[in-house]
Length: 380
Image 1 (cartoon, rainbow, N blue to C red):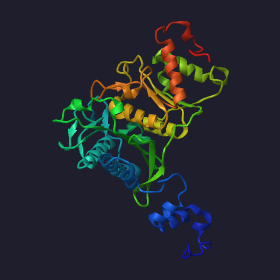
Image 2 (tube, one colour; image 1 turned 120 degrees about the horizontal axis):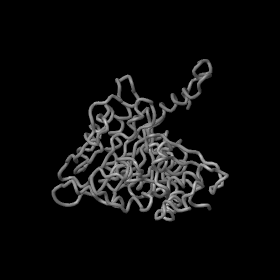
Image 3 (cartoon, rainbow, N blue to C red; image 1 turned 90 degrees about the vertical axis):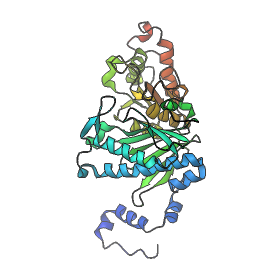
Image 4 (cartoon, rainbow, N blue to C red; image 1 turned 180 degrees about the vertical axis):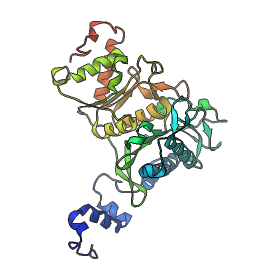
């Protein structure tokens, strides 16, 4: 750049080259910045342009509205305690778990943003019944407005999940949401982390866009994401081990034995407390996530919601070459029995999920048999 002055005289340049990089980037147009980004086709372009060029128009409209709404949530999350206690309880949710300020704010923002985007109705984790937005709309949206509410006050990862289905013909009924996950038109999530990313699929691979904080717009950062194999990571809440079904206990026992056990190598355990962060990590680094059903009251059918957590996660993971099951069955083949039905969920790199499935298949009928000795299920 010919008009860049000699900045050696300034302490911010000598001590902090990043500050200069940021300053210089602001002086470039969007086109110049996009041209400087190396990577796959489309990287550096604005999300809206990518969706317009690649997604079905009605789906692009919904995903664009979803992304635009997330900017307001991202801004409030970034401001944190400046705006007061975002983790304060403001009343019970329909499932008895107290709603927090940020839960309520997020839902209102997304409902408002999806209005006018061709969405007939929305089912939300925050309320019992669906909300009709546009009786003539052609799509249905299931949403978890804020995943990871327990992380609000510790400044850890939060997110939002969304799932998009076709709306059946005729007057809207709540049962229209009860569709198999394989019928999703699109799925996405936003991760509010050190940077804000939206990860999405409309059935043609998985793509990511990152929020450009200077322009307050999403720009494409990764296209055609694939779940890597060979990861040494698994994610599970080990504090519940005494409640786990035997196949899960056996699988984790084998993992914990490391290079002395059947896995033949040492593994690392991860647990964030917000599934949105685990999905993101697995898409980037591979591995497996396990949230099984267990013996506790209220956990007999798992804990994650099918419509707006398990289904979109499964769609994204499968589109990226991974797998998602409940232990025995593919998640996307299942139809929820109710709007807020729960399910066990195991997802990640395909080879690892298939291995977990073998633990279920080979030990499911004999939980007290020698297969479930302390040293694990599959000695291979």
